[in-house]
Length: 67
Image (tube, rainbow, N blue to C red; front, side):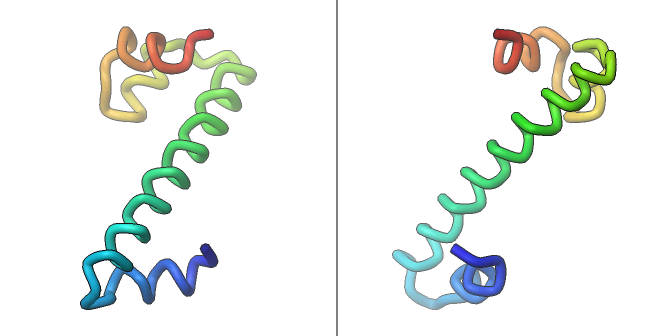
């Protein structure tokens, strides 16, 4: 889904269209988070720094991304 289509879908009065757009946003946010955490780790960031930046504990970010 393109960003313009996504924006339009989020304003739709049809709940099915809006909910699909929300799902697309969730997937995009997850993919973006994975990439950003990987970049931060490559640059030497600690799990605590990453957790602080995401607004979560270091334990939760490590459990989610510390493979």
